[in-house]
Length: 108
Image (cartoon, rainbow, N blue to C red; front, side, top):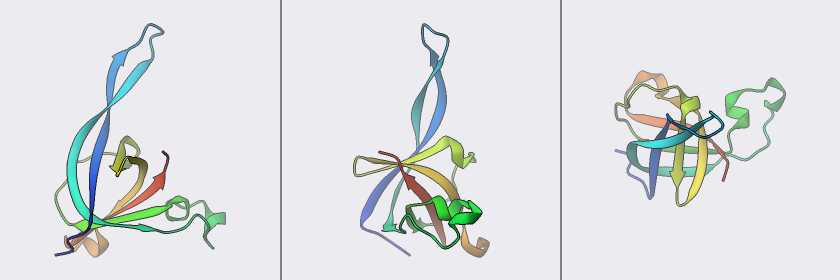
């Protein structure tokens, strides 16, 4: 059990309503409340030239494993302490179902 000291809200973008211009105004629906650890990974990486997801991430959130509704990470965000993060990648290391690692990019 990993436990943690940080509450995070995982949210999924929904289509939402059309505005007067015909554009979709996205809304965010809750997916899961997670307890885990948030760590800063830095913004500079030796792999930056490869444009990998891990090089773009600024933070990683690690929590106990749980089955999540299937979703494209591009449609997910995480809210932690009033700060929003884009979800770049979700990893279940070695498919052991022991923990989840969310690679995040701070956006707000």
